[in-house]
Amino acid sequence: MRALIAGNWKMHGLAASRGEISALVAKMKAAAPTDCDVLICPPATLVAAFAAEFSGGPIQFGGQDCHGEPSGAHTGDISAEMFADASAAFVIVGHSERRANHNESDAEVRGKAEAVLRAGLTPIICVGESEAERKAGKALDIVGGQLEQSLPETSEDFVIAYEPVWAIGTGLTPTLADIAEMHAFIRAKTREDVRILYGGSVKPGNAEDILAIDNVNGALVGGASLKADDFYKIVMAAGGKQ
Ligand code: 13P
Image 1 (cartoon, rainbow, N blue to C red):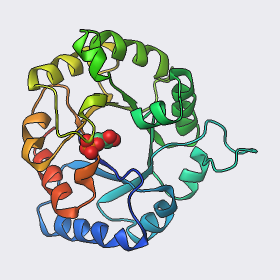
Image 2 (image 1 turned 90 degrees about the horizontal axis):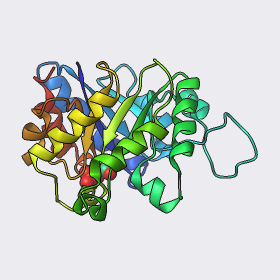
Image 3 (image 1 turned 90 degrees about the vertical axis):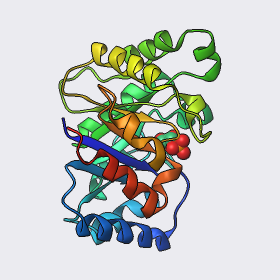
Image 4 (image 1 turned 45 degrees about the horizontal axis):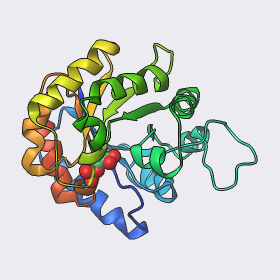
């Protein structure tokens, strides 16, 4: 399966950040072609401009969240159709920061994932347990419940991202054995052709080990996706992975 290395810029980046994309494209073009897909999800304000400037290149662009409806009286929200119109290829849904800061339920996340498919794009559906849940030995139960209730009921293409909440932005990661256990568990609950990404403090220094784990089909990268140098190293770590 072709790996997907996705960068989630979160609420970081201005028009001038095009320089990081430009640097990443230059590095990728100078190296042997990478056999993985590379995606950057910048703030929504930048998707259309980046997709236009870098169209036909080795990087795809995506949104970080969307509304479930195609249009309507929802001030400040952005629909999946609008991301399609901006030439996005993917939209992240159900990120733990959305679940925590905006009280998004599993049912809402499923609605958003279905909206992304309706718009002809690919959803990246995030799941993951909190630190307390992991310590209580409930990580598999929590993720299992999230999967049951937030995956779309479809045979269309979607991506799952396992992001333990306590590993996001902390520099902490589960052990390789814990990642392997969770990804095997997620695989057993979904199809063979669904890509399962790991996210949470993926850095150039740990990417190769994490990406070598069975059923880890790529990474969802936060902080280390903001700088072309770091992100490129993670892309290269995925280079040989099938
Ligand atoms: P960090 O890579 O900064 O830990 O963030 C992970 C994440 O939340 C990606 O969606």
